[in-house]
Structures are given as structure tokens and as C-alpha cells.
Length: 310
Image (tube, rainbow, N blue to C red):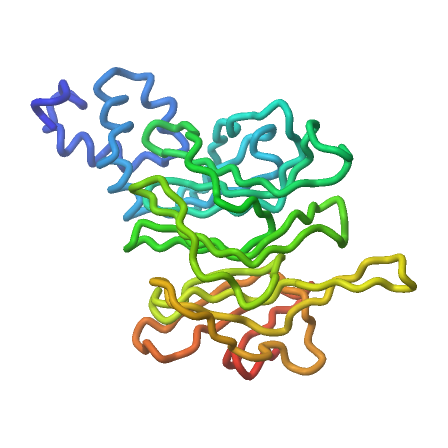
């Protein structure tokens, strides 16, 4: 670092200077980069951002369509907020929602979603999106990546840090403006970060959208929980979703999907709420524990097969 940059802080070795700069919350890095070229070079380097990731946790919040309204990063340690630049905007589409956002390495990914396209007919019918974008922390900018093979919103997804991959499953075209209707798919894909390429995998056992995905058993399995598939109508007019009460799982390296059975106890809600998963790192065979927000109550899974309890 001494040879590459000029003196970061007068009178101190550059390694010590970089260590001091690393203590500054990420939300203030934009202002620090304007101090001098040396500080900008250090704060923008991938190695520096990578070292920050090991010591800090950042939360990203999307108030609404990220191509119109800026997302925000929150540093819980420093209690500091930092606005991100909006995603690249397509003038032909609007109202993006039900997209998935996840972190992998020092990058933030925004995948798919449901939106309205002014080039489609009828114009008020939402369409699923296959677009995918990556936000890079070290240069603070968005970049488009290869689009998914199948457009989708309201789908299950999970990051595979060790394999530098992302898994997506199911989804459809459901928009938040509509309580029902929309398409459903069962396709599953895997994104290779290094090759910037999506690869097809064995599809889900059935059509499933509005589902939640996560890794289980120390990152060796991909679980897809809940969601809706077929729909029916009341009095032949009002569409109503048929929600799934089960979960399915597959190995992260591929293979056949297996059914996990009914995971909602009798009388419990069927529609999936916000879920947090805790895996047992010491027991590969143990089922992960699920915590779901249901209104003002939190449901906890005793085991996934036996259902949830309050």
C-alpha cells in the first residue's frame, strides 16, 4: 500500500492510516473520498471493502421501486443511514415490486419483480421481469447483469457464498396492486457470478409463487416454503388463491426435489409472513428453526415437519 498510494495520514504508515479509515462508518465514505486521491483510491479498493464486510453488517432498505426511489443502507453499529443511487431506469416500464434483493460478497443483487410495461397490451396488466442488477460497494454504482432465463416476481431465492452462485425458484407476475390473479411458474435457475450466466435446474414439483427460499443444513440444501399455486373463483367471479401448506427441498448441487410435508399446524395461517431462519451449525441432520411474523404474534417452528407453534 505504501508504494501504491501517497501518505494517507501524515506521520503514520499507510497500513495504520487504512486501519483508521476503516473505523469510519460506510455512510461517510462518500465524503471522505473527496478529501484526496489517496483516500479515494483506498476507500474504493475491493480489498478494503472486503475487509469492512468481515467486521460490519449493513442493512439495505427499498422504500419502493428502486429505479425511481433511492434505496438506503443502514449501519446498525454507527446508527447511520446512507442513500444509494437509483437503479438504471427503463423509460418503458414502471411500478416495479415483488423483486428479490440479496447480498453476495461485497455486492447487492436485485432480481426480477413485477411491473407495468407501456409497450404491452392491455397496459394495466402487470408483467414479470427477468432483469437483474448488481450494486458494487467499492465503486458505489449499479451494473446490469445477465437476465434470468424466466421472468419472475414473488419468488424464492438464496445466495450460495461458497459456490459464488444464486438460486431462484418459482414466482409469477403478481403485482402488489392486485390481491389475486397473475401467472405462476415452476422453473428453477442458478446464477454463476463468475461467468455471469444463468443455468436451468430441475423444476419445482408444481407451480408455486409467493414463496420464501433459504439455505438449510449448513448450506447444503435449498428449501422453498409456502406460496400459492392453483386458484379458484368464488361465485365464478372473484379469484382466490390456493395456498400451499408444505415445503420442498433440493440439494444445492441439483437433483430431485423432495416433499417436506405439511409444515403448518392445524388452525395456523397458510399464507407465509416474514420469516427468519436459524440453522444448527453443529448438527447437519437437524431441521432449521423458523420464526414467522403473523400480525402481532411470532410463530416458532418446533420442527418443519410438525408445524409451527406460538
